[in-house]
Length: 117
Image (cartoon, rainbow, N blue to C red; front, side, top):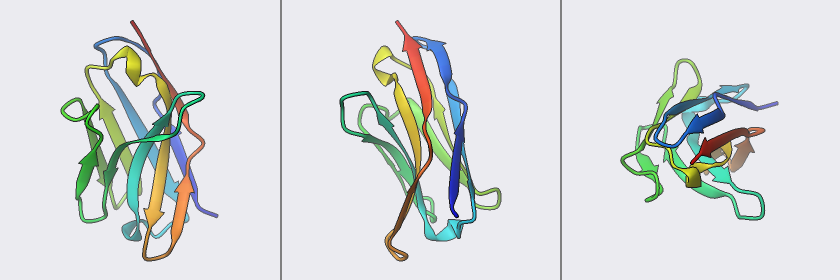
């Protein structure tokens, strides 16, 4: 059974930084685009950033130039470095693994990020 386990969430002041990490297991990592999404209660889950197995990266406009996504194909991890955090970045952040080739889509359990203003 595929597992995605997030870590690194927490409480931070506005302007601060956090680093989220997602560890994948029981997955052929190289077949998956990895991503981070976030959700505020009552709202739809939204894309934050994705990175393909070949390293192609996509960011939401709201986080571009502040967040950096990276992956380690040997360690089966994907990280999200979040700098210059804003109150509006407060959300539950979810790790995602998606493969069009394999028609598979997996989610982690989520980690809370709270930015105090």
